[in-house]
Each structure stands twice: as structure tokens, then as C-alpha cells.
Image (cartoon, rainbow, N blue to C red; front, side):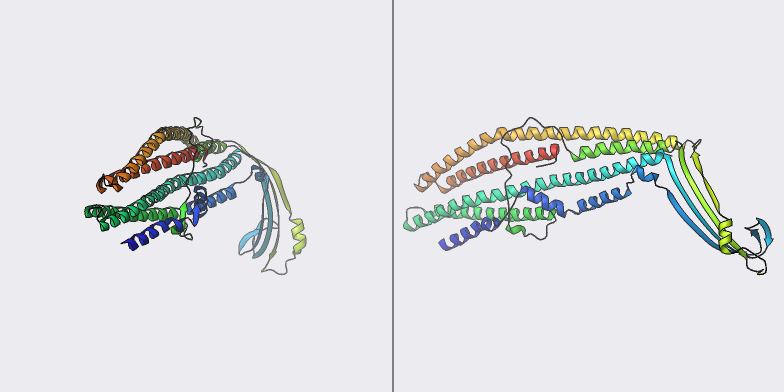
Amino acid sequence: MNKRLIILFLFTSSIFVRGQEVSWSLQKCFEVALQNNIDIKIKQLEILRSKKSYTNPLLELVPSVGLTANHSYNFGSTIDPNTNARVSSDIQWDNLSFNASINLLDFSNLATAGKNKLEVELSKADKEVVEYEYKLQLLEKYFEVLYSQEQLKIQQEQFKNTVDNLERIQKEVEIGSKPKSDLYDMQFNFSLEENQILVSKQLYEYKKKELFQLMNDNETSSENVSLEPYFASNTVENNFEITNNPKLNFAKISFKAFKKDVGVLRGNNLPTLSAFYGFSTFYSTPINTPNVPVDDFQTQFDNNKYHQTGLQLQIPIFTGFKQNRRIAAAKIQTEKAKWEAEQEKIKINQQIELEKTQKNNYFQRNQKLKNSLELAEKMLTTSQAKFLSGKTDAVVFSAVKNQRLNAEYEVLKNDLLFQYTSVKINLLTKNQL
């Protein structure tokens, strides 16, 4: 029996010896998770796409240039390019044209460029929202694992006392100073705690696997990792001003983007001024009358040169009321986005208020729970002495042990919830730990 107890004790004690080989902080979990998250990688590509789609308004002043070359054959009754007269002949025709145009004033293009710039900001804000929501998931899972880890430590410390008492009772029963019923009671309690530790260990390892799966980390063995407790300030702050909340930022940028949509549609109703330049020349020769004299290629290209340049003003007059209806719809969408941004701000403020209340509650409970734990430890010390002297039985002693254990669980749970709430408030208000 003693050999079995020693082996079991060494086994349970080794759990955290192995686990302490690699210690992970909350910050490290965040860094690894953000690097591995596929949704974030997709959003990063969306940012790059938005940047590529954005055109600086100055680039709109760069001319559009085109060069066209044609080589064709006309058969039968056709127009002779040299005389513009209709002839019955087969003609080979080579044409070269060069065109350039530039928009000097285009309100629609300017508004579109501004909207595309906002699309880049909107893509970045969308990525930050994904990161922000992912951090909240990681935070919750991290503290779940941390609670399981610390709870198991408490149980293992408690189990040491159970092992010592069982060995002592076994010896006293062997010499006849204790009844065998006490040994049975202690063996039963030993079995219960042994099973409880096994269940807690399994739950702890399962929670760790969930955390590492959430981080998409397939290279690290979760069995050899322990988590570092996050130590928040033990005071309750009063300043919870929102300085950087990704969801609120996204809502504000979305509102600006919808306003730009209205500007783009209005720009389509405004005049467009552009400048243009064109150059063309050609060469032709009859292919079924070789005796007809024609100028050579170079001479015709020089003689047939044609230049055209000018300004073009396009003024939309009547579009069938389509643009006006689109502008009206865009204004409604803009108003909707404005209220959605306001609603998001209210929701975040309400959430912060609730978390602030919870944090204050945990802070107020802290000292009372610690006082209860101190009393439970005194009761256990007294009960231990009574049990060893035979003044109380194993059942009463086990009940006192459980009370002390539950008191320690409550202190642990309250401390971790206080820390969790502190970090969550920082994420809600500043998007940082």
C-alpha cells in the first residue's frame, strides 16, 4: 500500500513539473494566435487588394494614350481613300492612328478616388475587428485553462495531506490504536480525491488542446505547456473612456464610406471637361490594276497626315430620374450607417458598464472570500489535530477538508474573474492588454 501511494504521489506531482518546462503568457498566446489565424491572413490580402484598387486623384490627370494600326483589303465597289470617290476596284489599305485624352475636371472620378481611399481604411478596420473578436475568444479560453490549471494544483496540494494521513492511519490501525473503520473511511476519501484529480487533469489537458486549436498551433505540444497567471491591478479604476475600439472604428468609417457613395452619384450629374488629341494617316494602293500610278508608301503617309485637338464638355441633362433615385437611396443608406455607428457606441458603453460593475463586485468579494479561506484553514488545522488525537472521525475531518478546498476554489475563481474582467475592459476600451 505504501509503495502504491508513493508511486501515485510522484505521478501526480510530476504533472506540473513537466508542465513548467514551457511557460506561456497571455501576450505570447495572442502573438502566436494572431500569426496563425487564417481569417486574419485573408483580411490582410483584402487590405492589399484595396490598396491596389486605390488611385490617387493626381493620376487621373495622366493622359490615356492609344495607338491603332489597321491593314485591310476592300473588294468590289468601295471608296478610294485618296479621292473619296466610289470606284470598282480592289484596294489595299493601311491605316495608323494615335489618340490621347485627359480628364481635366471629373467630379465623379474625384469622389471615387476618395471612396477607394476609404475602402483601404475600411479593410484595415475590418481586419482589426476580426482580430479584436478573436482576442476576446482567446481571452476567455485562456482563463478557462488557467482556472483548470490552478484548480488542479490546489487539488494536488490537498492530496499530499491525504496521502500523509492515510499512511499514518494505516500504521495506527496496524498497531491497534485506531479502528479499522477509520482506515476504510480514509481509503474511501483517498479514492475520491484520486478520481477527482484524474478528472481535473483530463479536463485541464482537454481545455489546453482547445486553446491551442483556437490558436491554430500544431507545432507546440500542449502537454508540456503551462500558463502564466495574468496579474491585473488590484484597484478599481474610474476612467473607462473608449479610445480605440475596432468595432466602433469600423462603424464610423462605414458611415464615411456611405457618404462618399452619395458624392460619387452626385458627381455623375455634374459636367465633365476633357481634352483630346488625335493623329492619323494611311496608305492605299489598288491591287487589281497594277498599271495605275500611285505615290509610294512614305509619300502617302506624309501627305495623308491628319491632326485633331480640342476640349470636350459633357453636361448630363436628363437621365430619366435614375440618378436622383439612386442618390436618395444612398442618402437613406448613409443615415442608416450613422445610426448603426451610434448603436454600436451605445452597445459598447453598456458592455463596459456591465464589466465595470462585475469587476467592482469581484473586488468587494475578494477580502471576504480570503477571510473565509483563513477561517477554513484554521478549522482544518483544528480538525486535523482532533482527528490525529482520535477526538473526531474521518468523515467529519473529510468534510472540513472539503470546506477548506471549496473556500480556496472560490478565492481562485474570484481572483481570475477579476483579472479576466480587467483585461476584457482594456480590450473594449483600448484594444490592448
